[in-house]
Image 1 (tube, helix red, strand yellow):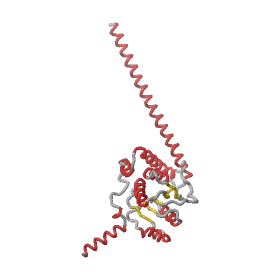
Image 2: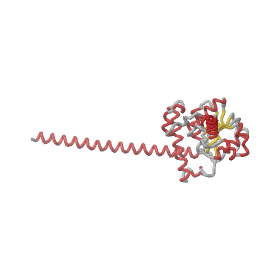
Image 3: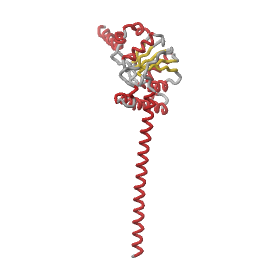
Image 4: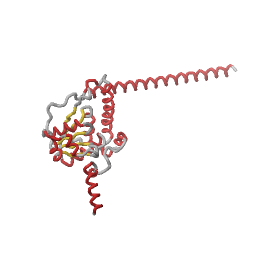
Length: 262
């Protein structure tokens, strides 16, 4: 009986030891998780600070000449600045990428009456791009069609890092010159304390990180499944370019009316 009692005591001690060991391991895992989360948060904040502090607060005084200009839609000032650069001979041709399907060339001419001739002769409208990845894909097609080797990129200052990341990934052999558009609506100096600025820049920083990371795991954004997952849909409209836009729709109606009359 004494031997049996000792056996029970030994078994109990072993169970207690294992139980304590299990708690210790859980504590270690919990501390490791906290440390990893803290480190990740510190790295994110440091990266965000570097990203936000690097955003241009002023538009460039002098812009070098390039083969062509591309502007990514998202604000009327972007298009106005791009047309102004075209008029200043900073590029031979302009692509306005990501134009809304309801926006016509005539409407752009009404908004920029002094540039009506430029819009008629030297401006191409891209209706297919749905997001920044799509802008890069459609710009690459345009660049290859014309044989351009250098490109002046026009977009908002906070959007410029991601735009250049996407463009560089899609067109690695091309030379890009950034022309950031600065508006009074964004105070980049308040990137660390102004909530309206943080609310805009923090998600943009996350998108920029995703764009950079995506470039390491894919060869071509045009055939990327990740681009579809990230954007929630294909970055480029599946419709042919020639059937998109008010002008194409008007031509289609005219052809339909001609067939009906015939």
